[in-house]
Image (cartoon, rainbow, N blue to C red; front, side, top):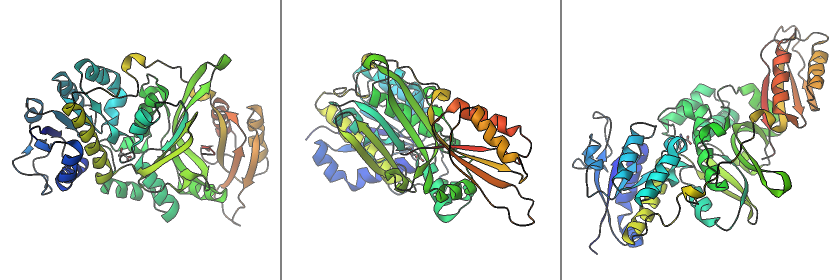
Length: 443
Ligand code: HSE
């Protein structure tokens, strides 16, 4: 065997170190599968003072990206730095130099995917990204290759490990939001910008990528209506349990029917939701992720596994290296369209306005326990056409001046009407604190 696949790593954090470990520990089986050994020429790190795992050999370590990007021997650039810049410039430069790229950078692909995949196509190289969505779950391969003969009607998932870890710890162990967040970050699940994990941004980047592949649509992150988990409280978790539900951050993509059988707009949303404890997604705990796909011919299909963490994510990076390496050895780079269809076949699809969505809600109104307050709330709900399915008012502790909670579960109502209800109720007298609205989904 005379061919070697030469790789340069940009980024040497949790996933970069995991990638080196798998490449070292599984070298023999990877060579057998690929048909050539993988050689890591350089590993470019950011922080000179950070202690390194012994898998990072001193002669490989560099702090200059030029050692990878300017090396004509490097076949595949592995970008694991995250964020938009300088990662974006590095990926552009690699593709323009006819090098294939493997990346875990969903932010970059969601924001600049059209440009970058176009560059890869123009240069006849691969841009692979299995690790960018749901860590170790091979969902990109499933959408790109396994479902080539089907049409995806809908997908719904838990696609951010950090927020799922936080919600699980809050629900199961009663931890405070900030304690659970610190634990998730310590475990290495967080993004380069950790606010993206809790404000729904990371999940919306992943949904943009998944929906592009699932629906063959040309999408950008602003097509997704996004709400994070920062405002969720232990009280709402307890209330959810009273109704046989748990709170999850869901990413949903649906192809809505149009007129005369034509495809209608896409419904793309990331938001917390109360789902029944009997739902398959309810038992997806901690850093686990899951994606439920509804295929027209396949029917339902649930993929689940670790969506964050060193080994699951690095496993996907290395599997991509094997695929891209095979393409290099057989001169078949670009054989499989990286986003299921080539850029020329991605079509712009209309997206449903968030206020037009019709769904059920959990509404919580903290009120002063005085006559007439409840009646006024019910009046506002009626005025905005929000039908009540269930209503409960907590009893007041004798002598307490604390507000009491009124919880309403609604039947289906328009999102716009729910928003109007909330702002109108807020103006009523006897309302002790801002009302809370969380979607109810059957997931
Ligand atoms: N920050 C991401 C998460 C890492 O928590 O899911 C994996 O994409």
